[in-house]
Image (cartoon, rainbow, N blue to C red; front, side, top):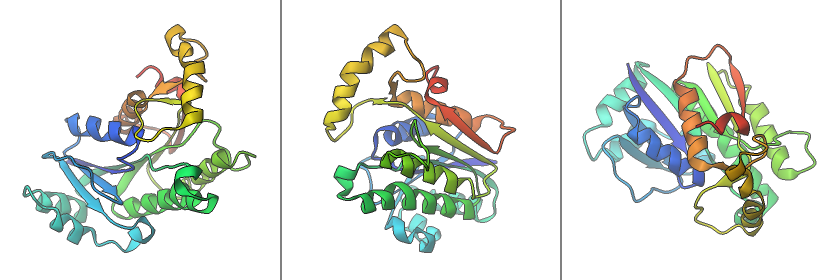
Length: 238
């Protein structure tokens, strides 16, 4: 049986790591990157499709795959999805900041609505596992807006009947972001010694590649639970 990975959020810190690691991983035959725009990247296993996430439920996947069929991969991918003869895993690292989004409303649309819509869409396509990058402190009752939205996403994802739902809650992320985040950079300076000294595994910063490796490892493992919250300390070993 072929194994296909759907991935949303590839332009972000963890998303880019997920993309590179999935392309290198022999356990996945194809990777379908879903985004608002395409990346300047080509690979024999990679198909990139783009569109408006708010309308994803109305996308015609067959047409989108056919339009991007530059290497003759359209038929085996679509046939595997259409006949439910592939094992499909969906990875989601969609996310932004209020500053980049422009408002709390737009932030919620991207961090909540688009994530849930992507999950619903991949489930209708036959995805059995969904792995989502949430955040430490995610809680729908939180007084912190960011954590509140992340918590609401987690609760709404639990309503979609995946065979397995992995909720990954990393602490402060280390890696090379495209955009500069002042508060995050200050926090890195203050907390990075925790990484070197291996202190406070629950709170110490974690590298983007560690989170990506953990997500792929959990996706490929046989799971006896339907929903699993993976704290940052459990991702530190990857």
